[in-house]
Length: 275
Image (cartoon, rainbow, N blue to C red):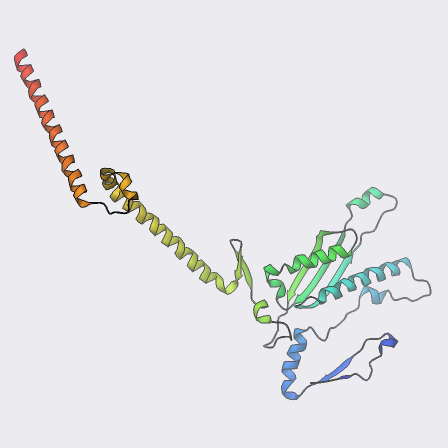
């Protein structure tokens, strides 16, 4: 590519803008236009209030001075926003309420507001960058009496970015769409994998809990027989001890049955004697 000053360009001393003619080979024309589109060039400036209220007399009116101040302040803030990496273009609109000199109390309810239009390459889609909050703070701090809540930012992502990237700007990460799932910020294409892993993990935990309850239900009688202290010992539970406990339990139940039979026999003998 070749760059040379345009024939109708004015020097810096003349106070005009400096223009350049850029020429590329025919094979690189599409790529060059994509690069210009990525950078938001050429910028087309429409008619604004500052152009409408151009100074037409020796003594400017109060309205002209007010418009020049507001437009100059808005343009200065917009130029600062354009310096942020990933911002293609920005426009700032300010609204200063009219003050009523005869009713000062009514001026308290009137607030300064600002709206910011930002065209970007995708950098504002990243919630971790907090770029919208930073722009609001920049605008609110630049204007006296402007509250942070009264600043509105409209973000517009460029539709066509082409396959090329700007020098020093990595668009592969910034072009990703981010979403928030349960307060967790992640790439949009990772939501499906995240949900699959999350619910699989939940099902595994539930299965482990059910298995633990079932094992506790099955082994609770064994622990009751040998004592809960055996659970905290490194040695395995002895099967001989379990058999001994079972035999002792069986003998105990047999003795109880024989005692009950003897008591029944004694009761029958007493009844016969009474008769």
